Length: 202
Image (tube, rainbow, N blue to C red; front, side):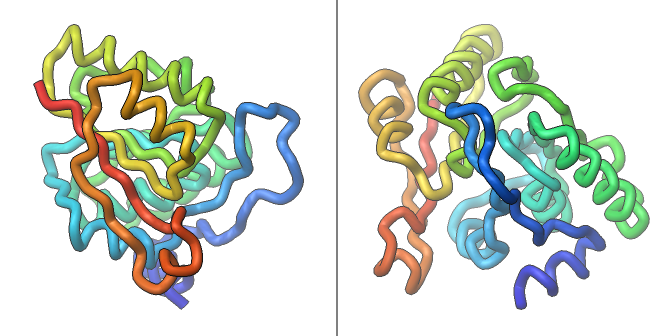
């Protein structure tokens, strides 16, 4: 019910999941973050209109439109699947019919995650387990290189975090765990149903 309600509210279509299997072992099947999970996350984790969020593996842009609608923050979606990018751009056009002031804050790029050039103002990075830890390591290293050039506080937001992601962050980077957000009811059956927020604070 939440999927239908929020898609209608935002004037977008994001409910379809990816069918079949990808040819690459490094990139995982797309599945949008449930709206219920987003509601829980943002009851406990704060964003402001000054933040710039990058969603790696954005699919059709659900997270991007949700964040812009409720927080007026800048959002960038990174997606390697050309069909999903077309859908995301169609959603952008539809969303902007009701949100006229969002055109300069909602962007999508069709590229591999490791090829995205981190903007010096990007400060929040979202991952719903979109790819292997090898790709994740490359992306995080790009973020760290960007922070070395432009020092700022950055957060990594992990939904359904893999043990490999967590091990890498806690043992091979300077990121520290800032916050854990559990999803009520779901976490008791599945310990992956949670968000982990890691922060690098300069």
